[in-house]
Amino acid sequence: MTGNIAVIFDMDGVLVDNFRYHLMAWEKFCSRHGKSISADDFLEYVFGGSNADHLAFIFKKELPASKIAEYSAEKELIYRYLYHDNVVLIPGLKELLFDLKTAGIPMAIATSAERANVDFILAETGIREYFTAIADASMVRRGKPDPEVFLKAAAMLKTDPADCLVFEDTLKGIDAALKAKMKVIGVATTHHRVELTEAHSVLSDFSEININKIRELFS
Ligand SMILES: O=P(O)(O)OC[C@H]1O[C@@H](O)[C@H](O)[C@@H](O)[C@@H]1O
Image (cartoon, rainbow, N blue to C red; front, side, top):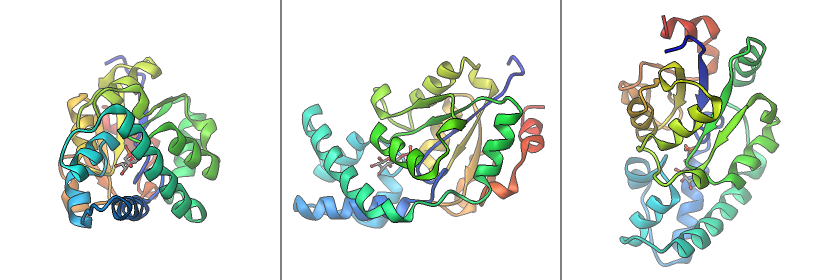
């Protein structure tokens, strides 16, 4: 640990509460391809992971990279179409981003989503200026629960993983952050608070956290 902390935000379920829009998009995608996925299976087995893992679950086999790219583009177009007029930041997030930025604490996004979805969320919410680094699906070989995307974000921030705090809403993401040896706070949007007990702490939204509480996690 060097003492210079950084904060890494997952995107879906942490910056915005959009689980149901991803679910609707996957359901629509499945119906177009003669497949199906239940909400329970989606939540338990795939949400929070990579589209390659989602597609392997839906098609019951690994797909070639060209098919993964084609199907991902189709699903994400449906998702952005459905979610477009409904994008709202999680309460308290903007204030926390401002406080962290003015305190000189660097921030990154580490997401299983593709870059077009990141650009979509940042454009819709106007929070791009707060982030020094963005690690997306295209930059890693293995999706969460593998720690690769969080380690990539820490490297981009030039911060020791032990000095990083992650905000995550999924069990896969919390697992990944812990494997990266980072502190992790669960955000109870996609799951109930009681399901996120592996995290160092849990909150319902960002109005429950501030810089002093974040610093205390590292003391
Ligand atoms: O890592 P994040 O930001 O939670 O992103 C996860 C999601 O990213 C989306 O692009 C996928 O299609 C979702 O279904 C997936 O689980």
